[in-house]
Length: 437
Image (cartoon, rainbow, N blue to C red; front, side, top):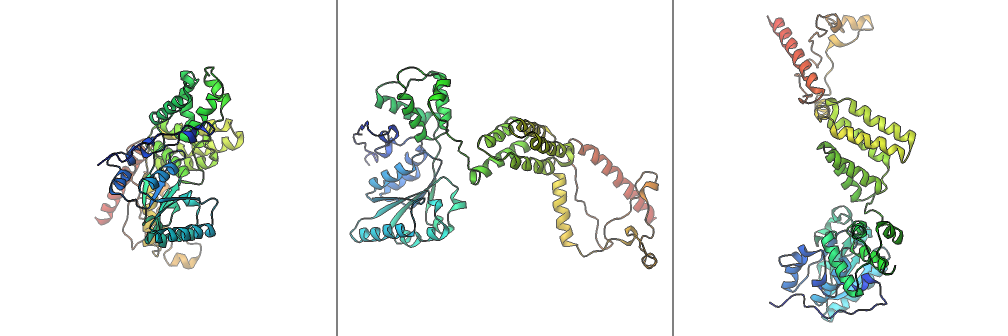
């Protein structure tokens, strides 16, 4: 078949912002989303078949969600209607649906693009369902949040979720080349400053072009990195403390610590700080890591994590953040064991299952004569009076079989613990055999 993305002549309207002037006029101009638009991609296959499913575009800012929706509507001959969930309510939706219904009666279908669709509440999202089901609208929702967390399951089941990728340095370079071609000159930046510009963009194509336009307007002098920083404002890190980014980064930090990758752990820790995360939240997670993933392999890990918390609370920011970094380094390089964590989980499971058993009488105190007569404390062996400091008595309920919950690993401090456990197990076995004989 013919080229799906035939390219018309683009206009150059210098009165508009650079990002708007470089907005793709056809799908082949879209940069950075080849996995969707090139041959074999989900959108390519739909366009080739001459139809479009209802979609959810999930991706970071500045990746072309709005532009792609508009161009898709043109390509499959749908009327394009756009609303924002931030500024629209039920009355606005009703008007859109009524107009789409009339349009459908007249033989024209509607692509409804909803920006920030996750801002609609659950009942508002349900309002889309009948109009999506009967084909009154083809819904294309855009969100920067994880759809599985923010959108109704019923709505998700009627849409395909397509993930848009953040811009790479290669795709940003394509945008820069187009900007330079449009301006008729090279961007006035030294090489180090140009590298800094790519880093500041943080994968956001729109913000990148806005910065490029600002640099063009400074004149023809080649700016160095310091002059670039003075000319533009730094973009806030792409980090939502209440959204998925928050959980993604703390998961990355936790797993880097567990994997003993100290450098990656420091990176994710500083990424969270740079994004405005509360250091006390990070410290709580470090304390939890110390007891869950290190435990008795290095009991000092918990001391270190708690000390970092106390040091941060005493020093405040930014000095206290060095104490957190020290804790991150200690935890990442410590021997790892989840034996204590697993022992707790297994013991709790057993306690729920066998919670009605009474302790054996020989380990119960007998503060009254009646209790003593009932056998409380009878034949209790005081471990300190034994030759090995270990009596080997049974401390489980009489009606319950002995269970093993704690199984140390052969790393760090737990190596020595395992030796002691093995020694005591041998003594217990010897005592049991003597009682049988």
